[in-house]
Amino acid sequence: MATLNDLETAIDNLLDHPLGIGQYQLVRPVEEKAYEAYVFGLCLRAVRELGTTPILRGISGTPVPFIFRGAPGQIHSVARNYGYAEFTINGEAFEIHAGVEFRGASGMTHELDVCIMRKDEAEKCRQQPDDPSSASLVAGYECKFYAGNLQKGLGRAFVGLIDDMGTNLRLSGFCSNSVHPQLREYFRPQRRPHPHFRLTPLDSSNEDIFVNQIKGELKKMTAA
Amino acid sequence: MAVNEYTAQQAFEVLMNHLRKRDGQLATHIQAVVDAGKDVDETQQVGTRRKRSRSYRRTVPYSYQEALEVALDAFQAYFVEQPLFIDSCAKNMAATEVGNARSFRARWQPAEEHNDEPAIESMGKRKRIEIELRTETQISEPNQEMFELREIDVSQIEKQRDNIAQLKNLVDFEV
Image 1 (tube, each protein chain N blue to C red):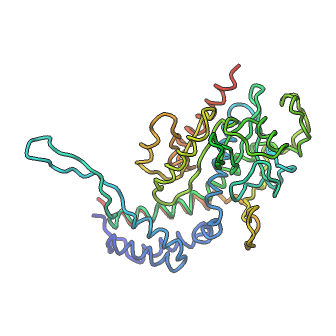
Image 2 (image 1 turned 120 degrees about the horizontal axis):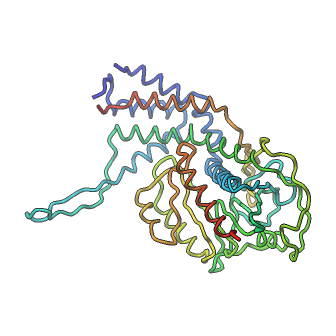
Image 3 (image 1 turned 60 degrees about the vertical axis):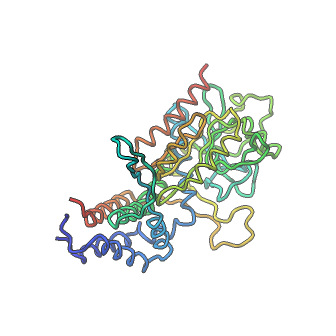
C-alpha cells in the first residue's frame, strides 16, 4: 500500500531535482523561444537529410554565438548579430529564419516564428532595408509551447495570418508540444496550416512527419 | 481500486501544496489549467422513438484523478520537454557549418557562383546558442541581456522522466 509519505517523497524528488523547479525558474523567460529554437533545429535536420549541410550565418558577422531574437524583428536589423541558416538545393538558395516579420498581401506585417524563404529576397532586404514580401516564403510555422490545453484563439489568429501570406507559401504549420482536439478539426480544410500537435522529442514519429513534409516540398520545388 | 492510503483529492492537494511552497507562480498556472476543465460529448434523448438522440459539447470539471494527470503532464512539459528541446536544438545545430561574415554579392550574380568565404570548420562541433532577453526595442533594463541554451546531461533528463513515471504510479487510482 502506498502511503502519504511515499507520495510526498516522490513529489519532493520531482520538484527538487536539478531539472525541477530550479530549471523551470531558469528557463521560464525563454520557454517559448526555446521551443522555436527546437523547431528551427528540425528545419536544419530536414535540410541535412536532403544531403545538404546548412550553414549558419549572422546578420553582421560570424554567428558565434548564434543568437535567436527575443521578439519579432526585421530581417535587416543589426541590433545584434542575429543568426539564420542558409542552404542550396539543386542551385536554388534558401534561408531559415526565426522571429522575422514579413509583409503580407494586404501590406500588413506579420511575424513568423520559424520560416524558410528564398535567399534572394532575404539578401535584397538586408542590402536595402525592407520587410521581405510574403511571395518569398516557402514555409511558415507558428510555434507554441504550452503546459496545458492550447487556446483556440491561437489557431484562429494563425489562420488569419496565413490567409494574408499569398499563394506562394507551400507549407504552413501550427507547431505545439500540446494539443487541442477542436483545433485539429479547424485546421482540416485545404490551405489551412497543418496541425503539428505533440511536436516534441518525446514523440519521434511526429518529428518525422514534420521533417518529411519539409523534405518533400523542397524536393518538389527544386526538382530539375 | 489501486491500493493507496490516500484519495485522488488528497493526492492532488498534497501535490499542489508542495508546489505552492516552492513556486507560487507555477502552482497558480497549473491550477488555472486544471480549473479550465474539459470538453465532453453528451447525448440527449429526443422524443421516444429509437435513434432519436442528439449529442452536444459540454465543458465539465476534471475529476481529481484527471487533475493529477493534467498536473503531471504540465510537469513533464517543463521538467522533461524543455531540456529535450534544448538538447535537440543543440544536436541539430552541431550538424551544421558556421559561415564567416559574408562579402557583398551583386544582385546579378547567381548564388551558386558567389563562392565567398569558406565556412569555418565547425561540422559536428557544439555551437554556442543564445536567446536575446533584452529585445532591440526594450528601453527597460532586464537583469540579464542574453540567455545561453546550455545542453543538459541526458542522464538527468532520464532521471526526471523516471521521477514522473514513479509519481504517475502513485496517483493511479484506476484498476
